[in-house]
Amino acid sequence: MYRIVVNYNHPEDPQAFLEYYRTTHAPLAKNLSGLSGYTWGVAESLDGSQPPYFVSAVLDWPSKEAALADLGSAEGQAASADMANFAQAGASMYALDLETVV
Image 1 (tube, rainbow, N blue to C red):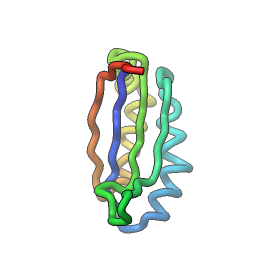
Image 2: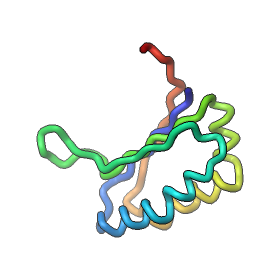
Image 3: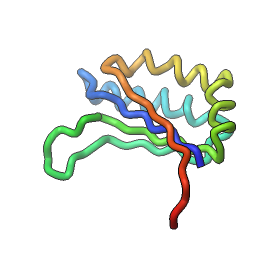
């Protein structure tokens, strides 16, 4: 499995971010035809302090090739371009080529 994780920094207006993410960005990303999983959530720390990120999203594909094809598609380009509309505080991404243990 190939996974991309997107960590969004804390926005100035958290409620506006969440509203936009739920109603506009998530539906765009959901249109990626090769996705095998897409989850996201608001970050929490175990000790009550502010976590380093506001929201993290996890997108899974069966292979790196499938992920790259999706990201290069019109739908992938639209989802990537949409980040400028709500992620003004910035975001970081990384990819993992996962090995299953259990």
